[in-house]
Image (cartoon, rainbow, N blue to C red; front, side, top):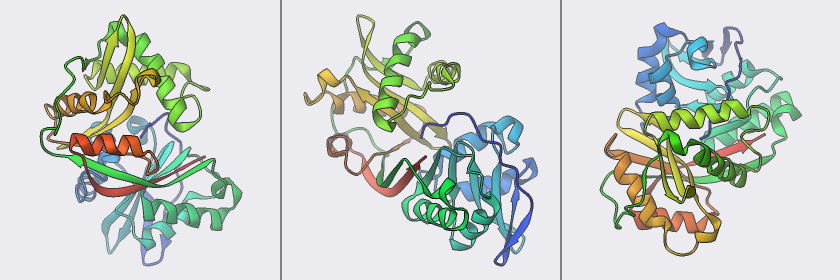
Amino acid sequence: MNETVGASWTGVHGPAADGSVRVLSREDLPSAIRVLSTSPVENVFVAARVRAAGLEQASLGCPVWGYERDGVLRALCHAGSNLVPVNAGPDALAAWTEFAGSQRMCASIIGPAGVALDLWRRLGERWGRSWSEARDVRASQPVMSITTEPAVASDPRVRRVTLDQWEAYTEAAIQMYTEEIGVSPVQGNPAGYRFYVRQLITSGRAFGIFENGRVLFKADLGSVSGTVSQVQGVWLDPSLRGQGLAAPAMAAVVRLARTVVPTVSLYVNDYNLPARATYARVGFAQVGEFATIHY
């Protein structure tokens, strides 16, 4: 997941079915962590942000909606530029659909495939074209993880990126994002994306192969929470593809990531057969399925 600037949804408290919805606050943090901990791999994106920044919109950059029933927090939804439901059943989805309103503030809906697609359908049926008309729907994105050493040898050239490589790495990141998503990440906010890449580098979560100042391969740990990390932004220079270089490079990323946390995860488009084959060769196994709706 590639999080950009958070939205500013606030909403009001309201009943739905036999539960209720409200924007969570710092007092809800223990309950939110409990919900997030029910599925560490699936929830790593939201968990990483909540553990790092808490639940206050001022620090997190967006609100988190809670769904309560019988006085217990059952589910939550990260309501930023990525709308991400967590532990959501039909009642929570129905409640959030009413809570969201007609003005869409997010750039995407991301989550477990059945849940994300159901939320998108409900929002479109309730509020119309602002929610129903999507630029791209990726209905099947296998979620994969590895908890052991990779099954192939590592490429020794993969290293953590340093700040003197920031410019070249940022350009490669822009190429990767534009190729994958179909729009440039610097469109409308170039400084924000550059700062985001800088944060990845300074936190030791950006990895790459460089040759004469040129990026040949890159990958990031976009989210790290508890015992799980999520790899994103995997990119190999187009001129080098099909030569068997990706698997050893990814194996090196896994080994470096596992010095931070034991479980390394990612998700991939179902139609990207070369990438899926590469990850399987490294030792990743499918553990779930996401869907992403891009606006």
